[in-house]
Amino acid sequence: MSLKLVPPRGTRKCYAIRGTVNGERIERSTGFTTRREADGYLKKALKEVAEDRLRLPSDPTFASAAARYQRNGGDGGFIDKLIEAIGDKPLKLIDQDFVDDLAHELYPEASPATRNRQCYTPLIAVLRSAGVAKLIRRPKGAQGEARTGWLWPEQAGKLVKAAHEVHPELAILIVLILSTGARLSEALGLRCSDLRLTERHAFIAKTKNGKPRSLYLPPAAIDALYQHPRGLTGREKLFPWSKSGQLYKIARKAYERAGIDTEGEPFHILRHSYATWMRRYSGAAEADLINTGAWDDAQSVRRYAHAVKGDTHGLVDNLPVPRIGYPVARAQPE
Image (spheres, rainbow, N blue to C red):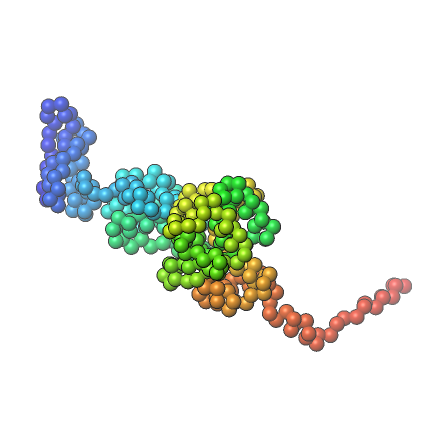
């Protein structure tokens, strides 16, 4: 490692630093015309070299890594705001303190769950895609509270109509999730060849837990799929989107037209609605929801118990609790 100060010469008015770091040739202007200020710049550069914080010409930056991540099909949601804030900062300089400060700066009034979703998650995804093996801890409370919001049937009807006006395939996607409880990633991963409409069946090759599963297609899903504007032949993807900001943008537009609050989750609320309807309208028990394959255990589906009367209500009605008769009229005071 060797860096030295080079005085101005020719048309160059500022001092420069020159040398070799980790086998890479470095020459850059200090931006200063006086020796005292240039010496200060050199000392700072030498300190950065000692701490491996000096940016070399070949060092990947967040902006370049984020662009590559998006070109490779990565989720573009919230990335643009991060690129604007971080810019060409070298990836090696992004650490826990930097991410924590950035999340509070970008979303000062947001909950930990929102900061996690809109800052930590996309930033960590970019780092991983660039092969940077840094452990960035998510904020306390990142999981947030379990969401239990759901749509009434009449709200779902308005939403599907509005979605069809925005994009016909969006309406089909919404109906598919509402009628099957599929996760958004599962629905977007489907190809036309995964469907067997005559058998009311779809095959999901990869789920959240990595296990494939069969998806039963009820009549509402079958009717919607038969109306697919591009047809259902070949191995084409069933829907044209990835899980990205573009998809969420048009989904929010449909919700706005329908006058419905998404609770920040325009697609997950559809999955909650499916589970709630199963409990409320079909009388499905927790075990029935687990048997659909969309949930793994009783703890996962217990959140939907609010949609139905408890199983013990009928028993409580039969308890031999004495009843109070009609009140006796009080005598008028003399």
